[in-house]
Image (cartoon, rainbow over all chains, first blue to last red):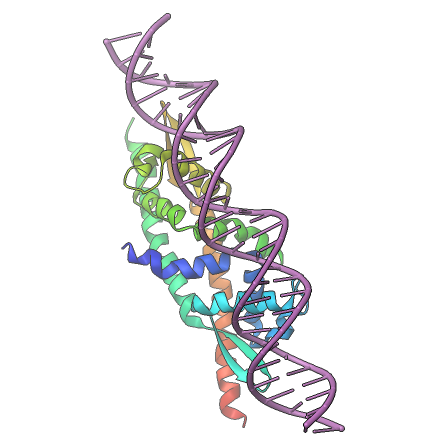
Amino acid sequence: MTNALQRTDGAFAALADPTRRQVFERLGDGPRAVGELAAGLPVSRPAVSQHLKVLKAAGLVTDRPDGARRVYQIDPQGLGQLRAWLDRFWDQALAAFVAEAEREDTED
Amino acid sequence: MTNALQRTDGAFAALADPTRRQVFERLGDGPRAVGELAAGLPVSRPAVSQHLKVLKAAGLVTDRPDGARRVYQIDPQGLGQLRAWLDRFWDQALAAFVAEAEREDTED
DNA sequence: CATGATCGTAAGCCAACACTTACGGTAAGG
DNA sequence: CCTTACCGTAAGTGTTGGCTTACGATCATG
């Protein structure tokens, strides 16, 4: 149970930063190189590189060399873990929410 | 589209911190007062209070006075927004992922 | 009305973090 | 080979953020 923290910690922390999430979202259209991602973003290329490193450590992206370039791609695994946590928690929380609402109706 | 950033920014940022997510998860069992939440956590009560403030600003919880105490409860709204973002992105990313995998098979 | 309980906020401190510039390393091209 | 392009990492900096202690406010109790 407390393990669920560790597992989703990286993903949540990674997606917390707006710039980093922007990089990640941009990767949702398909594989991109670092330079492509950096272009159009208000930060430098090394900054994007560092963001990608964090995303990779969180299991959200994978990278693959392509000549002198390096292509990054979304890894469904990390995204799936996040979804699993959210789904499980969604059911639990919603159940507790409804139960509480009913308890408020029946009691004084 | 860029608006989706703003909308989910608060939620992601709020859930990024492990302690804060622990508070939130604990709230998944049902409504709790601040003192109850603080007990069992490795941080002080004011710290929990500040965390709840952030969670509330993110639309993840609601609060209601109960005498001298203050009861916090999960707000399905914020959780739903997060789920919506994740679902939408999941479909998009997975589609791009599969498309890329197939493109790799057909091409040289 | 005085006391104890519960809580939010302010002030201050320290670590984490996002960013920049500078550098080195590798791959394609003339 | 020499040059250019592309990228990751190191070092340094300024800011953000989570935590603690201290304080004031509000509510139930006697």
